[in-house]
Amino acid sequence: MRAKGSVCLLPFFLVQSLVAQAIDFSNLDTASRKKGITTTPATLDGNTFSHDTGYDTLAHACEAASSAGRLLVISKAWTNVSALNCAANTAFFGTGTIQLAAGAIMTTPVPAICGAQGFDVSRSGPGSVVFTTDPFNVGSNPRCFGAAGDGSHDDTLSIQAAIDAATGPWNGATGYPATTFAVLPAGAYKTTAQLRVYKAGSPHPGSQCYESFSLRGAGKALSVIYYNGSNLTPAIRAIGAEMMFTDFSVVDRNATGWISGIDYDGEELIGRSTESTIANVVIDCHSHAGDGITIGRSSFQADSLSINHPEIRGCSSGRGVVSLNGNALSTVLDHPVIYRTWIGVMSGTSTNVSIFGGEFDNNDVNFMPGAGSVFLVEGVRSEGSKRTMYTGVGAYGQNFTLQSYVLASNNMNRPHTKTTTTAGASRIELATAGFTFGDYILIAGAGRNGGDLHTKITAMSTLTSVTINPAIATAVSEAQVVLDETVNQNTLEENGGGPYVHIGNLFNPKSGATVSGSNGPQVFIGNSWRMNIANPFGYTAVSPTPAPGPGILFGNWYNASPLSAMPNFGGKSAESK
Image (cartoon, rainbow, N blue to C red):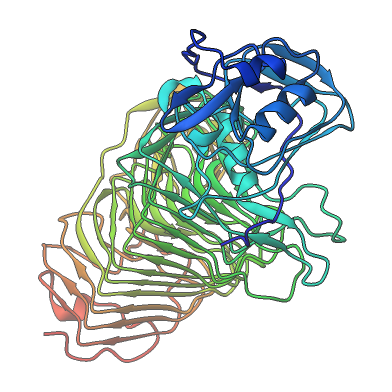
């Protein structure tokens, strides 16, 4: 909590109230008339008010209100105000405006009344507003800065003002600003630009971070931010350490999407753990472009981020959670619910991600580890996803561990689509979306001498722009593209250097619950394939690549063909019943 008496600078915008006030002019006391006050004191929520009407300068109106111990109602449009220093007991209310001159500073307490009776101090013109006190023992409140929370009024500046008011001035002794937290009461908050949770242009060399800032909602079903801003920015951009974002929802309402719902970038000064938390939030991409939560976009140190009980949905052409660089270390997801995304969780190169519990449903790919990464999945359940895991890092090593995972069902439905392409092309455009990473497909007439081409989708830049291997041998026009039914469609495409470890997992669907070969070791201990899978490990004469690497099988069970059909993986296979 920020110490009483600390100050805060807000953005330079026009001060403007949002709600008209009803002021009683019927009674004017003699003392007020002698002082030039032409309004009667009016009582509103137990506070006595004075009016700015009749004063030649706003400073005079403020001085009179302050000396009388009254709160000042602003009804006029004050422009080019050069200075305004109200006493600590003076606050503003009303429907007027105050536009400060460039370089001017207005000193006032943070509004003590929130909602319809509070004066909106979020837009102050080219000058600055300095708050003398912070009365918010429960956090800075956007409704004190004019937020309507009705889903239609633009509340961007009001929420930004609350965030700024909850952060103190730069502390030269510690190198960080003093901070507290902002609250987001129950309501629907429309925003039209990214919310900035970082200190741009701070005097600390190379650092913009906020320390220990929190944004707290009333509940993920109660406090909802509806983002209507640019598709080139996230809804919330955070730079800092020991931050917390909790108990609210962020929903994309821009048809062209966003960068992400929350973009967390950690600390610019590499060398310390940032240890921030995102908890009990909903991120809804609304089937638009973009990601749910992005980590480490600017290569800052963003390690030890805890993402607890998130619900991330509708990122159908993006990632639910993605770490973007090697400084986004030790990300932990606790009981996430991630569904209808292109990729559920994707790790960057040389990062480590741990997922404990939760549900991954109806995603194209649940997990995509990066080269050199360490990726742990434990106690997760999945149904309706097209692929459990995909990686295409070649010979690069990656430690992937799947433990106590339940694959209840998987989605083998793919569209019949078409493509037009030239001979030798390895990147093709599909007419419709629906295929995904790791799909073996058949392209009619695109093979050698006009035969059918059996190929595999190894990469995707969009939902319809895919890279295949082998490449097109014969040019085709409007050629049919279907899922290749002659090949095992592996739910685990482990195409890297491994090692890949599978312990105590249950694979239940009838088809597609197979595991590809890899360029490195694979270990299977105590796994179960319940349905009639012809070959749970996915090796056939048609699809032997990459060749099975060295491996260990111990105590696995499957209801399929005879035990001798189990591949040896270059090691020893124990009894599997």
